[in-house]
Image 1 (cartoon, rainbow, N blue to C red):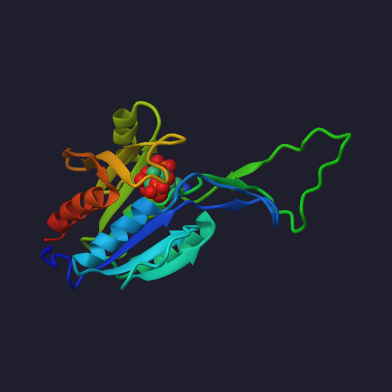
Image 2: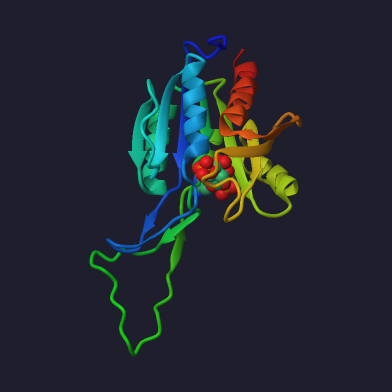
Length: 221
Ligand code: PMT
């Protein structure tokens, strides 16, 4: 049994993948199942934290003792995370957030016309929630953690992303059509803004989650 080293702390975790609707039937989405974020929420609760889990389109039962806020789009996720972050000691962004969304939403199903080429989809930028939270720090000493899902040059891209986002810790994991998304296991390197690098060997998503909370707890001391 673990020490309740997060007792008295409020932590916010985002999980799952945002869906950006085109019409009432279709959306632009990604392959996140929410498992890594749910593992973070469960392990934080087991270590005594009060946990707010902002869950984007994850189809898993609510973890016991965790306050779950369901959301759909990146804009909804931003609102829910910012609200919960106001009094949070730590925010961990494990959700896969769409960088772009369709510029327009058709209120009726978009129809296929036999004699026409398909219309292009125009995209607009979504807010960068992790960068915003890192910059504003709703509470002094708040620890902000991001994830980086990379397919190529994983560590090099992760280091660039850590600087750009301005978070304290960035969990860099490799993803692919059948890698990390939806699986029970993960492996990663946790990069610190202080230059630290903590490798986490292949294993259950809970093990990576516990390493993240170890690093967060140390920064909260
Ligand atoms: O859900 P699973 O199936 O268990 O899979 C887990 C996972 C692969 C989704 C997870 O481990 C992971 O890597 N999550 C982050 C996915 C992601 O969006 O990565 P990114 O490199 O595109 O974004 C970097 C960081 O910025 C992330 O913390 C993301 O939440 C955040 N972000 C991104 C875009 C945006 N507009 N706002 C953000 O806050």
